[in-house]
Every structure is written in structure tokens, then in C-alpha cells.
Image (cartoon, rainbow, N blue to C red; front, side, top):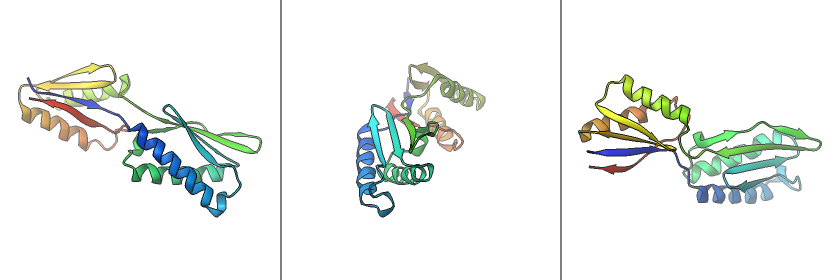
Length: 161
């Protein structure tokens, strides 16, 4: 029976490269000279530090541009609360990996509402879609690609006949 998996993954190596490029650019820009503004990456969490809120916003704009050039979908980023502590502003940015339970339920409901002849199963942080015909699976992929209001980047992998 044909099947495929719906996943939401970001290449963390490319994220690390984008963070390095952002820090290099911040070192050369006149408005960030000697300000101590930087972005650090630990596991799947980036931390942006700058002297004030305005510079955090400028830093995030540079980071978004670098991530987009490296092929990282900006929907995968989850911005934390901006904290201003003394002379420093800090914001955490999480790179979401996998499809959580709420998003998986929304995807399953969407597929079932369109009455396509496929079965969906949540397997950890991914969604398995299987059906009797390859055309039904391609219809599901087309349906999920049309969803612009969905706030996770989706990839379709492991297509088997």
C-alpha cells in the first residue's frame, strides 16, 4: 500500500551557518560596532543579545535574511519573550523540529474533512499517510501545500509505492 510521511524538520547545520554569518555581519556594521550584539546557538535555541529593543529587532532582521538565504523556512522559528535586563535586551528564538500533537490533529482533521480515501496515523513527531492509490496521496500533498495559514513548514518524505 503506498504511503508517505509528513514531517517538519530544519537543517540545524544550516541554522548554525546562518548564525555565524549574522555574527560576522554584526561585527562589520557601523550601527552595531562595539555594542556587544550577538546571536548564540545551543541545540535548537538561538539567543539574541543586544543593548536595546531596537537593536534586537535589527539583529533579528539580519538573522531572518541569513536563514532565508540558507533555505530555512521562517515558519520554523518561534520567538520567545523579549527581556530587558539593565543595559541588555535578550530574546530566545526556538527552531521547531517535528510536528506536535496539536498540529498533527489539525492535519488529520483537514485530510478527513476533504473525504480523501487515505488513512492517517500520528507516529511520534511525524504523520504517516497511506492509501490504495498513488493519486490519492498526491491529492493529500497538494492539499497540504495549499495551506498557507499553517504555521509549520512541512516536508513530504519516504514516499513508497
